[in-house]
Image 1 (cartoon, rainbow, N blue to C red):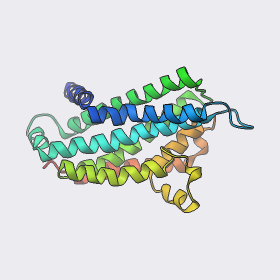
Image 2: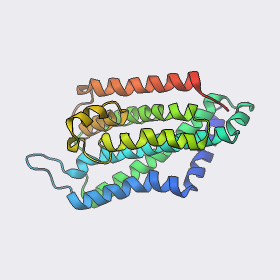
Image 3: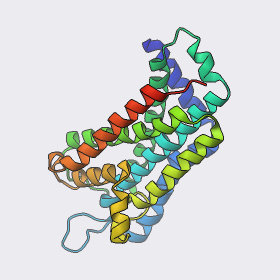
Image 4: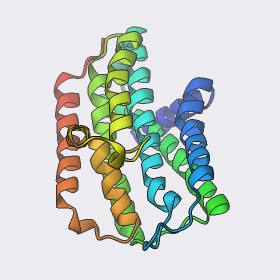
Length: 247
């Protein structure tokens, strides 16, 4: 089973690299956004604070990578495979459904790590990026955040019958979440009502949790964000297991 998972993950990763639009919007677009805004605002510490714009925002751009990879790419892949009958043929093979889904998930996670790596390299090389938190707590916050966004992505990925419908569902979720969660614009710029609406999205809690830990806060000071992200993981797993459609 491990060999099957590794083979599926490897093939999916290679297919992603060969897809120009997916490669650009998942790996390059968040990087270009960070370079653009960071070149404007720089990374000098804010007044009476120890951190600057890049220190504060790098977690938000990581969230953008997560949302693009787990929501857009995963949904598009699974819906396209369902429409073409590939999932149906997979189901007839000795490979278990869990191996197929795990392989897909690992490939998208590897893509996410690649995007995060590019952001960190650019931040450290060009903007003197600073990290103030506990590295182990940040890794936990990152993995919890990634799992919650992946769980959300598995919901449309499990249900969308065609690639077109998958793209529509993914876009309906992706763009409001992107602009309201703090991934593209700071939440502080939003009206109070929109800030409250943004709390409906897991990406909002993911970015907030990662930012707090990155800037030196304790992971366990934010049980609300941890609870919401864990709830999305459970909900996504429930829907995926109960309602996943092979054809």
